Amino acid sequence: MTKKKKSIYPLWVLTPAILIYTLFSVVPIVISLVCSFTDWNMGRLYTPVFNGLSNYVELLHDPVFLRSIGNTFLFALITTILKTGIGFLLALAMVKKIPGRGIMRTIYYAPCVISITVVGVLFKAILANKGLLNNVLQIIGLGGLANDWLGSYGTAMGSVILVETWMWAGFNMFIFISGLQAIPEDYYESATLEGASAFEKLKNITLPLIVPSMTVVVTLSIAGGLKVFDIIYVITNGGPGFDTQVLATYTYQSFSLGFLGESSAGSIILAIIVVIISFTMNHYLTKREVEM
Image (cartoon, helix red, strand yellow):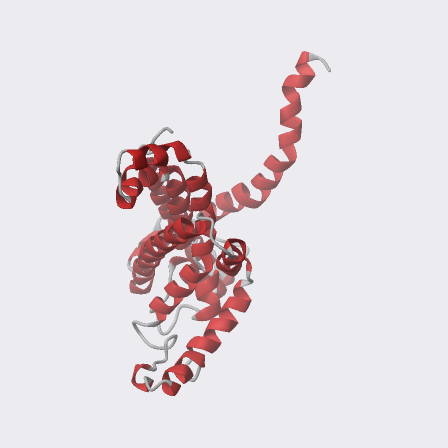
């Protein structure tokens, strides 16, 4: 193979991936951006008219849209904290050589590979007004705590947040385990010889050296939390009222009602929020990574 052919060979290998990415990612984004500046709707399906920033202005004056932004940030913040914290604690436990470690790791990881539809049906049965949780509370004499967990204001969002945490904490656990296993044992042995306590080892060795894994976990968790759609759509569909309405479900419902230009503007706003926050957090955490 000549030097020229060798130089262009990687391009031929990457071409199919680039074409697929362009077709299914770049093109839809460009189309959505263009449509967001039009009054495209079911009444003007074939004759959309350019209307500038009107869709964006209407969205920013829509109280439901503004509430969906607040719900999105709330969901992303709390789930990121819980999934990161619980995932890290599980990793600290599962990295140790204990009996049944492999089975326990599998159990903790399993929820993230279960179909969202199955998870939704399962937890709707558990958390319904006459569901499994309330029946158990009645049996053990705590019937006063029974509630319509998915149909009451204040508890619906908390319930969905807990389901999301249950699904993905195990996934984060494995990322942290990889980071913990990459830390040389010599560091801990030296710290032990110097009389360092378990807390001091955690503070001065584990936490600084686990930051690369933390960067991955936090970035994925924040991006996933801001883009959340499936778990909320399946379990509450944004209800009760707009208590669990997030940007993705708002955009989906707007599109379903035929407001195509407005829903495109909503998707562009969502994309901008995800990119800015994800890159900001990734940059912030990357600067704090420590070389081993």
